[in-house]
Image 1: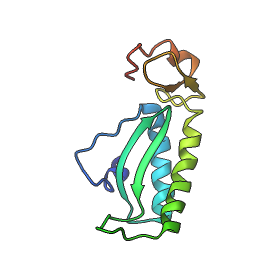
Image 2 (image 1 turned 90 degrees about the vertical axis):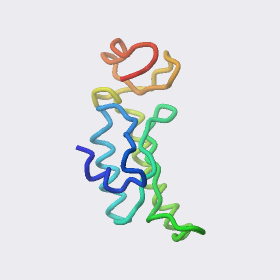
Image 3 (image 1 turned 90 degrees about the horizontal axis):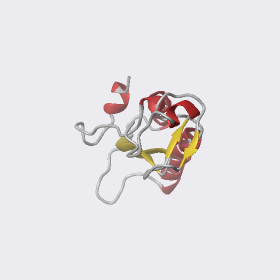
Length: 123
């Protein structure tokens, strides 16, 4: 499912660190980013503090940078919108969810998945 996203990774051996419930959201974020920045460089996709963190540059990084502040701000506006959306989607199953603080890591889970995800938080 995430093969189109993987093509933009700086490190092709990187494993995405999000649960299956967010994979569709990651793909939608990728499509939104590629619509504005077709040559973007992806550094990481992970769950951070209970929301989606899609870390990217507008294009391949070069020493000194090769994009404007406006481009970088626009990229963050796009990815931040998906981070906001992720805060209401269960990371495990994709249903409506909410932030759960009952584990050592913050997770967005639905009521059903809240009972299924163990204390260590591994999905």
